[in-house]
Image 1 (cartoon, rainbow, N blue to C red):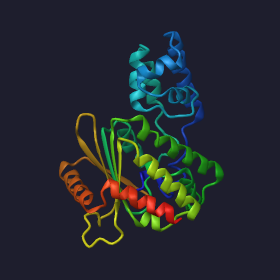
Image 2: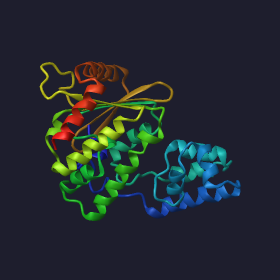
Image 3: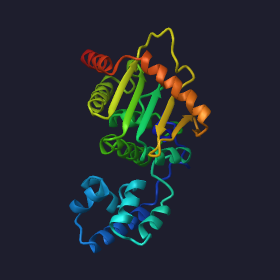
Image 4: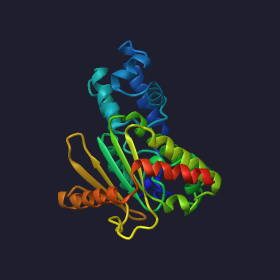
Length: 284
């Protein structure tokens, strides 16, 4: 699973066009205006909408797409008479996010559990900046530097979910071969392993490594993503090279859950996985 647009080839040129910066700036100015009308500083406003001060500043400056929870809480806290919600509805596109992945990306921002199995590359939520840049440099058709930077910015911003949503349960099962491939070379791999180890140290993030040699494997049909919504509904997502599909059918989701649960028992434990990553890092 490459997180839709989070892989090198995950977004076509048409699909990855950015949100016009002017519309984001207008939205940010609107929020800032209502915040000041309410007599709140960014430091006072941020805890009320349950986002960090840097995130609030980034949204007000038009540099970050506003997550749905931010929109709803801002509307309520600032008593905006529906204006913030209406303005947000016009922001139909996210920079660096492919069309087919946007619905999943929105659900992901509110999920209380998010499970990812990946066998092709380190998933977007765990990629180091150097690893992500390497993927974009190898994108075909080739990206120009502006497109690379746009995609890279979107990916790094999306990773903030792991630190901002501290009550969301994030589980990752990664094939050992993803690190043995040495994508980008030894320097990039060192940075990537360090980055994954850093994230694995968060209380809400669990990383497991699937051994390279495994006689039985429940994930042979490919990558899996599952999430649990705030109302405890489970959804799945799967992806091809230029397409993605959201799975809401309980029967299909149940099969994906069964496979993921089996893989959790087949992979190294989180503690052993961290030990293996440290061993890899020491060998570089």
